[in-house]
Image 1 (cartoon, rainbow, N blue to C red):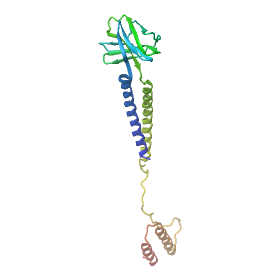
Image 2 (image 1 turned 180 degrees about the vertical axis):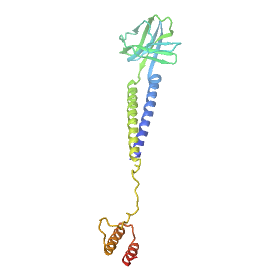
Image 3 (image 1 turned 90 degrees about the vertical axis):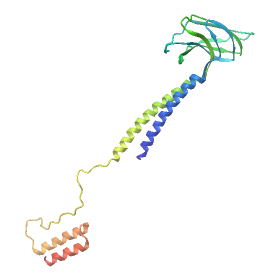
Length: 243
């Protein structure tokens, strides 16, 4: 029973560590591995180029470099772009889909559009925009395979482990309190009851009555273990002999 709270505390701490490590690992994977924002190429702003695009949905992000510390409200310049299929391919569908700001050191990127390409092929991309003050601005075409919902799972695990640790600490304190020995209010003694040969009543007993009362008390002491059988016999003989 005493070990159970300790085990609960250790398990809670392990869950806390796992949730923190999982959150950090997922964040790194989403930023550097799963979010391939420039997988299909980039176009300078202003500028134009041809890109080989696969079928499916892709992201279009504004990509630049900053010398200061980026903020969550990073300003996006006024941009426009056109994507023209070559060799009679169908027109892609462009949808505005502004996302959060991702920063790695001085590198900044913000998703602005998503493009749905129905058929893989070569596409002509032309970008226009007012980008004075931005360093090496360009439009990046790629895909985002990040798993943001995994971050919520690890965040929930962290909160659960925190509450679990709090409950385990309370449980441990209560068990420790119950296990603490209680000091007695009165000191117990193993001394035998005092032998009082004096009668409780007010009359004066005869010698024979005194001897019988003494023998009765000796028998009580023997029965309680205060006297051994030999001690009882010796005292009884002394009383009967009148010593």
